[in-house]
Length: 394
Image (cartoon, rainbow, N blue to C red; front, side, top):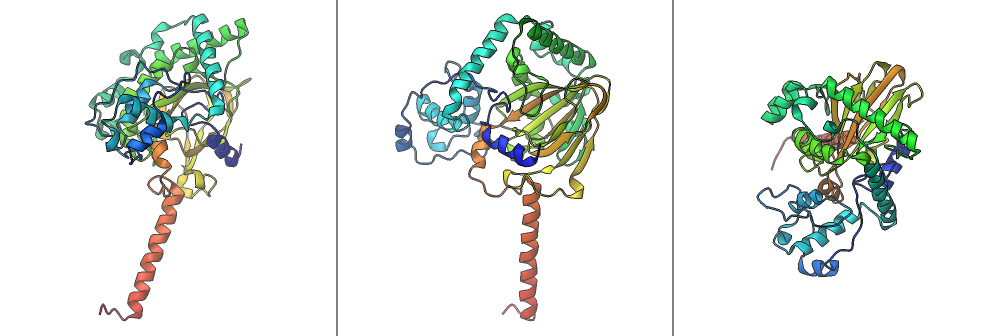
């Protein structure tokens, strides 16, 4: 798939959901309890804060029936403009719903409801093979070095466990071999059940013809905890410029490569701020990831610079954490069978703030080069003017 196609698909996909099944993290729509016109009349400054107000204690939204998870509202409330922090909960809720609704166009709401019913029908009928996988137990899920780094929760502790083949691509040992085997077993059990009951499964995205959306059959809460407690601490350090500290939703899935499965993954960008990619196994050759530079929407098809070319070979249990807009793909799997866990992590606050930005030179490689060119031109012009005046400052 060309990057043009990837960019078009990403722009058309409602933010906060999974591209392909296009349902992702949503539940069911309800009407806002407070007229938005009333909120606008009372509060003039409607721009979100770039950095969260950590001292503010948000209201609880567990009782709210919404197409978005209650935790999203709690997270987003800390980014509200100061004039709204002490507003009634209903007013804040209406304001945040207006923002989040932009990521779920009206035409998608019926589809969202169908997907909610789809999930419910699966979870009411499917019997998990390994129930212990659905609740995180650190000692049985993760390798000791990763647990220790998360416990210390410092940049130094994270850098002790990672290798960085290139800027913005972080690799580290994460999952226990026993956990990988159990998760693969659970996936195969689910796939057998789907075949037996002739149930249609949603695919992870528009590019993978094989694979399973983990959120669809009971893993949503576990993956949400994985994002909040184990991915966020690292993304806060390594990806602060794209909302790494404000991740509040995810799309979690499994991809499979090999004979009678997908063979490769074309050049693309993810619908995420931060992506976690962990190889579960098993025996395979080929399938290397290749990266070609981080780009904003405007420059997604721009030329790759030599220093941006990265190749990465998968190792079972080994994770790769990278920017969602880091252009990448996967080489053909030559032999064997490879299965990976992918989690797209998103920040609704960052996506809203991005609308007010025109320059992304703090993370887009092409924007950075353009900025350096402008700076050199400005410096050259200043030097030329200085020389023409003979160095006089009078």
